[in-house]
Length: 123
Image (cartoon, rainbow, N blue to C red; front, side):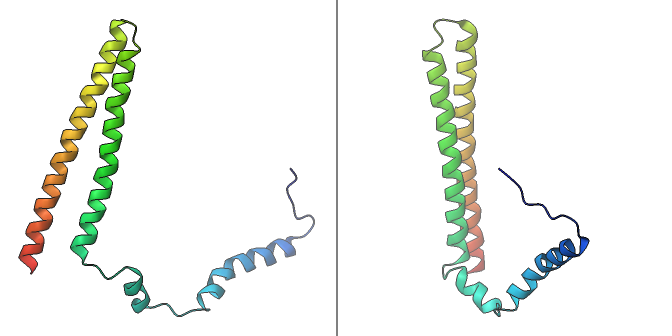
């Protein structure tokens, strides 16, 4: 694979650099984007529902990771062939996964409590 290099002139490099630096300014001159465009692109749902959906997605993703850690611990335990070191490592993984699930569930409960109270206080 060959790379294109500019030989011989600082003028050509300066012109290309100037064009690359001016390109964002020329692109922004094409359209007039204001706050109205920003409001319509964010959606028409309430902020509370958007935040709660974001929290649900993040905590769901973390829950999937915790379950995968538990499954990995179980797999290591099943394939340890009686080695006490591998069994101990597997137990630590399973314990870490369970603690992670407890933390995720507690954070979900706290987030829902806070969001509900903030919403009720502002209505």
